[in-house]
Length: 252
Ligand code: MG
Image (cartoon, rainbow, N blue to C red; front, side, top):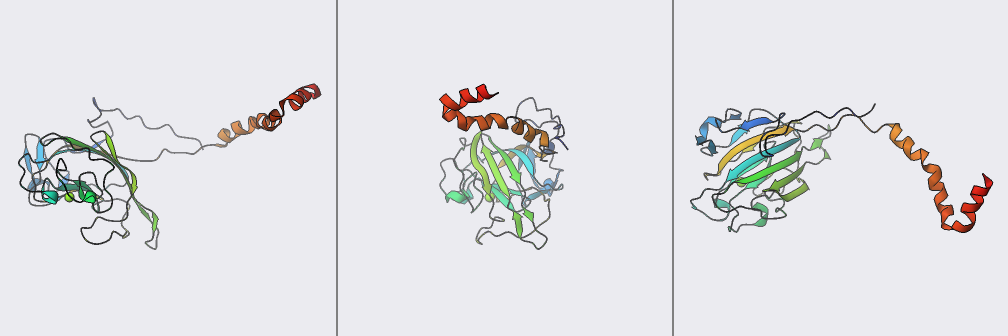
């Protein structure tokens, strides 16, 4: 078997716009893609948390997720009480949303952290009132039949174009107090957005389901290496250039 042709995906007009294979979770009109979506306020094409978390009706495994958010311009709290929300991948693994522009808190709880597991590599916050973009690349964990972790989950985050998490190995579900440890779960799960009492704004939420390239390297690739093998054998001889190179040519 050889490689199959990768699918053709037409990009959006700009890189923040959903490409042709994207699933749009919020395009500005309603949150019908989410359970409890009708609880949140939609105002001028922007979604604002109210009452409860919202959870996507669809379930996902590995994904690329794009989301834009803006902290409330009226500052009413500090630390974790300022512009707090979050994205729960598979309803479990939280990438923190927080107004971390000139707002101190514990580092593994600031914007771009995996909550209580790692700080981001950089604080890439824009000023209050400006829009932040998150581009998240998530690899779901895999469990053995007996419930042990076969492969952990990973998350990469680009915050406003800046790499904040680089293939971070998730330690388990996010918890406020407990040390994270994995519990086996299904291969897919929903995306949840946290309600933490703060009127964070959301817009332009879409994702792509990720599937690995299909096929494998064929033996043809290795044959090319074999064909060049005689040259490689010449190389050690080339170290003693003078005699061996000349003599070999004489021989043949
Ligand atoms: Mg949060």
